[in-house]
Length: 220
Image 1 (tube, one colour):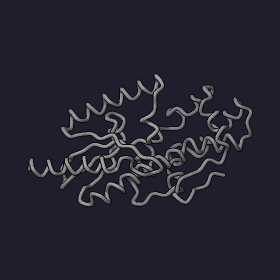
Image 2: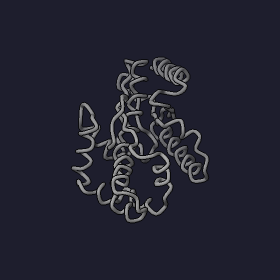
Image 3: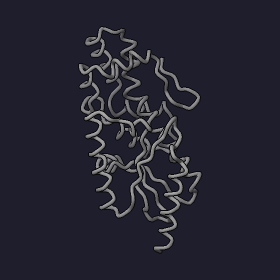
Image 4: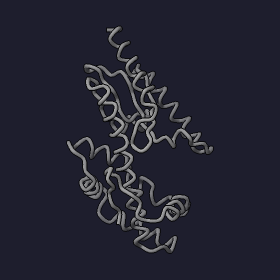
C-alpha cells in the first residue's frame, strides 16, 4: 500500500530495483502515454487552479473524475500480462507513476516557491498555466506590484546532471523555449533547482531576484 511520509510525499511501496526495472521496460512505455493516462501535469494544474487547499485524496478523486476510475486498474492488468508480475505490484507501480509522482513533483515545486515567498513577501508568485509550461518551459511567474518581472522553471537537481543523447536534446529544446519566453515577454527567465524539496543555491537565486527588483524600481 502506498503511504504518505512525514513530508506529505508518497513513498514507493515496491522494491526500488523492481520500480527501476519497470521504468526501463520499453514494452510498457506506451501504456503511460498521455493519450492513455492523460496529461498528468495539466490535470494537476487544472486541479490546483480550482482549489484553495490541495490534498492528496482530492487530487486522486479529481484525476479519477476526469480519466475514469478504471484507468489505473486497466494499465496494471496490461503490465501484469507483459511482465507476469503480481497484480498488486503492477497496480502500486502504476498508481505511483501516474498519481504519486505527479503529486510529489508538484509539492516540491510549491515548497521551493514558498521558500522564495518567505524571502520576498511583497512578490506575487503565480502558477503558470499548463500551456505556458508546455510552450515556454515556465512553471511560475513572479510579479512586483502587478508587473511581471520573471519567469521561473523549477527542476530537481538531477535534471542538471542529465547527459544521455535524448536528455541533451530535450534540454536544448528547453533552452529554445526559455529564449522564446524572454523574447516574447521581455523579462528574464530563471531555471532553478531543488534537492529534497529545498532550493539549491538559494543565496545566488535570491541575490539575482533582488537585483531584478532593484532594476525594476530604477526603471520606474
